[in-house]
Length: 351
Image 1 (cartoon, rainbow, N blue to C red):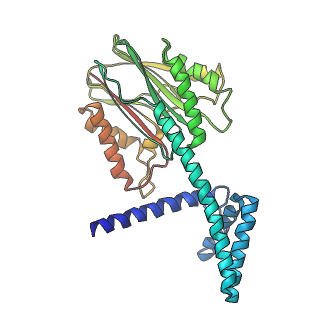
Image 2 (cartoon, rainbow, N blue to C red):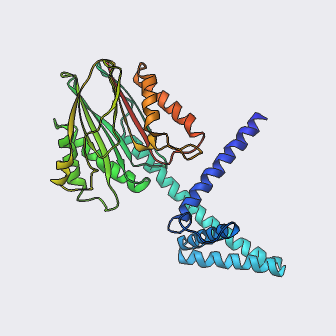
Image 3 (cartoon, rainbow, N blue to C red):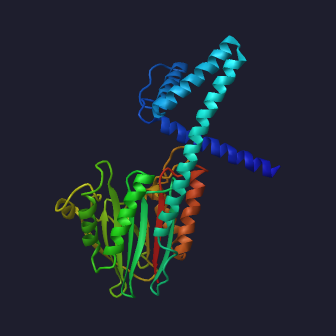
């Protein structure tokens, strides 16, 4: 009995998730949800008409003709009570469905390959360092995502972490994230500061990125000799710092604008670099907006306050424990709802 209930619950979740994705996809470009005339039933008829027309527009011209022919035969057969016409319409519609399914499966195979390549570019495990405990988590909202994180280690002298988030999600965002990864592979090996690194990235990316895209990023360098964090932020979410000495939590908010939004010297002029002293037991939390913007069924975001409360309650744990506590709270808060955006998290605890 429990097995069947679990299957029904899984089916219900699948239907709700896929229906919502399909609705959002076909709603794109329509006035549905923005301004619909009429009230009551008339409003739903207007919404249905808008989505149906959007569905037709998204088909290729040949498939649109095929679909309308199949639908026409099926309705004609139903109205005239001619089962042969109905069968012809049924077969035409199923032939079109088979074509769409084959195309989707081919695309899915390509996406699975892209996903494997993307995951292979991220750090394999977390580094073990004498003065630092690291934990991380990456979960794309779709098969591939626009979030990026990576590390660079300079012996026992310094540790560099970068988090990036490309506007949007999916394949286009993933390609820009890979561009950011390639630049960090080169720049992370040099003795650059976070601000210098972000300026160099912007110089390259701002000339190549499409106008409707930009990248937020944060670079933090932990200097083990001087026991400090040097941080610069290109429009990214504010990292969180727990101080073991004072027991207080603060948001690190250096000024900055997203990569690709301005060219130098405007970009460099808006970028600020800060220095934060670190003590054993201090915790740094880097994350993308998929964490704070995760929604529950009431469409309420997880928000910054809950993230701060989580760190206050779990700062005594090792880095992996803090990460797991956040993910547990996120799962409980979402009530089974899917993440609307990619989720990336890096927790660093000074030893």
